[in-house]
Image 1 (cartoon, rainbow, N blue to C red):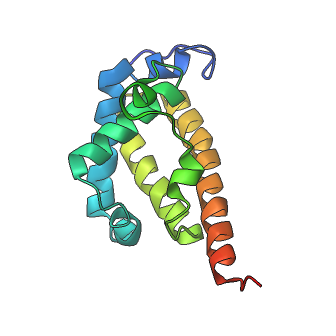
Image 2: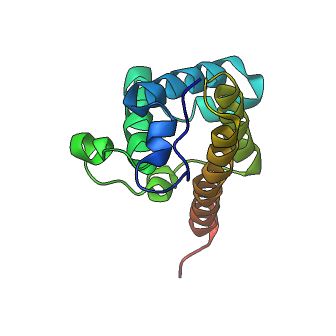
Length: 147
């Protein structure tokens, strides 16, 4: 088990509790394996059309910075606004919940402290919900006649 650095969310404690870059990369790999295996996630799994290795790299790099570690995403890909980047996707409650379900399954398979697993699952609900909200606002804006 990876020894947790508490309190989570302070400095790089969450990043360290996730096992640093290698631990985050392993989580992302397990997560995408779950996405591919779970029928409930089929729709959301196929929303991203970019290369699977690129998808994994982007999420790994994003999560490293999001967890308080190095800002590897922006160093490689530039600045990011997660909700805005996903606004073109049709993410409703079912898709949000499928994503969170797969992350919960991935976290269950990781050698993380149980308190950290719970903390991380709760924290991930925030951007997941924000992505859903922005996606739905974009859907409404597209369907509203402009005049």
